[in-house]
Image 1 (spheres, rainbow, N blue to C red):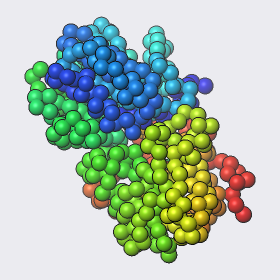
Image 2: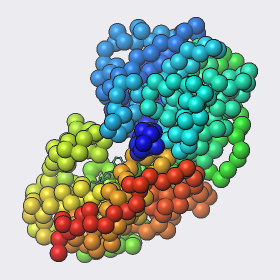
Image 3: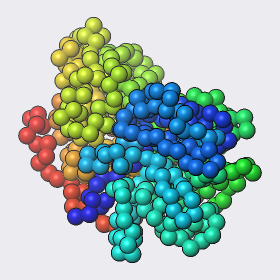
Image 4: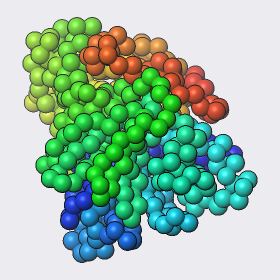
Length: 477
Ligand code: AMP
């Protein structure tokens, strides 16, 4: 079957761009460095010198790919866009590294994409029927083809034409010889913000990237907004049909960096509030509260504060290992939990421990960590999760496994507790999560918890049916 439909959404990415700065590619490198948590498999930068585009991209971390100062000589000009990407197995090849750069009848254009297009395969089939030849397996390439075939005259109209055909989640940065364009989809699934550095405009997936280069945060780019930056300055347009925005709640739960401001809030404060709320909902008598670092830290601080149980660091993280989940191969992932975390026996011995994490996906991490904490001498291990059970896959750009691999899609709370071998298990309720985020003012996409998908996709994948029995033989009786 067609690859684009079979694959999990894979655009768990970060984008960054700067226009009108003499050190554009260097700043883009720094911006990508701050966004490294959004994708660690590959990265790239395209710059414009006003007449031509220049590109450097490769598999690997930002510091490795751009570790040599000489590279910046091949990225001249006062404008640049960049991308960090994580992709799933099968598509982790160099031809899929972004930004994509093409020459077409109107000149050159580069594009960097964060999100996932849900009607990609349908459009691809149509384009291929009319003779288009695709060079990558990325849904992003569809946008380039639509752009090239649009009959509209101005770049802005051609982009509007092309993007009106696609559905799903997209934050996009385009660079031509003379312009940078940023677009956020009408639902506003992924974050995107606008900043200023002297006379330059900067666009980034998260505000932490603006902080690193000392750029001033101007505002978030609004859902459905297109921003065009050129030598005359910046202009803003709303060319798409308006819909009620549905920003992704999982950015708050896990994905964004705690020091970023997204969707009008600071991520750290939201996560800490999730922890406080979790303590109100799932109190337990215990001696210490510990986080699974780093993802559980702000929520564990909130839990400790609200419950009055002392906060300790019972697990120490080796920061020089990438995120375990983001390793492309299963074998490495299993190994990863051990190389990443080590218990502090002196903290855990004979203690009743509350351990906090942001989410359980397959249950692999929690199961290993509970065993690790017990082996270090803990008397009781109570797991508390600062979000509701993740029961449905994301189709809008967060990398989640098939539904059958999500343990909570087919198992009860007590079955999950027994699988992870905890003495007790408590998840934050949906209402609790919403009140932590302060969701009175905004609708959020909560599809990963509820299955309510705000943008419909053409068809479900076979493997998206929950599957009984997958975890059974390991569930402790
Ligand atoms: P699992 O071991 O499959 O249950 O994964 C749970 C762990 O993965 C938790 O520690 C989360 O912090 C982390 N996690 C959750 N969602 C994601 C994601 N989309 N990408 C990477 N890590 C994640």
